[in-house]
Length: 527
Ligand code: G4P
Image (cartoon, rainbow, N blue to C red; front, top):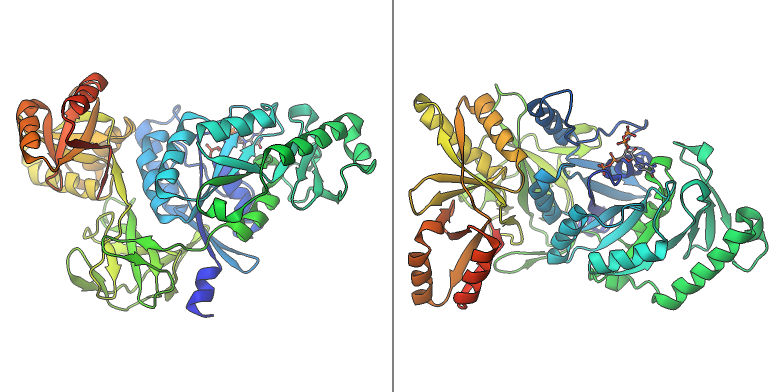
């Protein structure tokens, strides 16, 4: 197969959702179709469950699962599909944001009873920022759901994207009859005794006016469906794939993941319309996937679960060319040539050593602590991929050394955990104290636990009251200097020496933005 053929057949995407909407269930059904797994329940939920076990154990359990499910690759109808897993707990949202830098499209799962939830909105913000094409799957139609038109309006308004239903549900909950596939012009009937099996019964209905429809779903629901589809055609423009690829339009499907209902339709449409690997921006130029020379970037680093082996796996997204085992590549940040004797690929539950990988693929590289998120590999060109941001943290604590004899271990541990992207480190300009900023509260537990178990170091947390950290920049040197002098007590520097303003309150932030017009406040920062 030529490089271009390998690229064209690849689909690399993530399933994203607010916790509990059905991400794990849908992922599992997709893998079942791909033959990548054979039994339901094979994909473990990576949710952190509060309860019987302690949080630490849950975190470790979750980390174990997330190594296994980081990338789930499978073949389906000649396509190579890579699903990138995202953590289920919202405290790990930053991991999810970062994974989204390595995908070419996403499927968003929405609970049909709950509609758009907070986490869905945030994840969509990241997709919008990166112009990632999205398909929406409205799940749990077997439960009483909101009116489909209300849901479509809600998605459009809350996720700020035009929508186009490609299927339409007939009722929901106890009276759920099935889904009408608008484009294929067929009806898939829902039967609840078909739970957990792959085949639902599909009937061709070329003409919705046909009395056959009344026989299948009763007169009442047939009438309703005729009215609904008429309204759909009246309200929504025809599906425009280019608008979808430009991330301006989201096709919407309805179904029930746990009943494997509507999932096949989703998958078949997905492989037809979803983009193959897209060009990737760097600081100097755009890299096209079909370029002969290999380029790629690290978007995720995962520490070994075994504390006796402090090695890590770095996940490399291939952006162009062919990755080869045992071939020298340039690690751009260090300027060193490196080759990998055992790069791994991930096929559902199995991890195997590979000889070649192509754009869109994710390769696991063995790392002894040299790599950072955002690192670029090339065949010699000094490139740096952009668009791999860190997000302004929202929770902050001072980190202190709790064991004076373990100072070095603590410093190393903090350094490496920050490279993995677990949290962000700031140094206060006021007193030089180290501040850890995270997206979620659970990260503090993760850090403390991992410092103790992997680095033999002990830390202590002290409270600090900060509303938000944001990076500041200005072309007006005088104003910047003035700002830094006045806000001296609230200034810090990040790991790369950039200025960070630690706003006490949302009011203080708004006031600073108002009073210092020449200063730009950033809520994301490129690594
Ligand atoms: P998540 O990864 O997005 O967090 O969600 P997950 O797939 O774990 O699903 C959350 C819960 O919703 C699960 O129930 C799952 O069985 C259920 N679910 C998923 N899809 C559907 C659907 O189409 N209809 C209905 N009625 N339920 C659905 P749980 O009780 O939390 O877990 P479990 O014990 O059933 O696994």
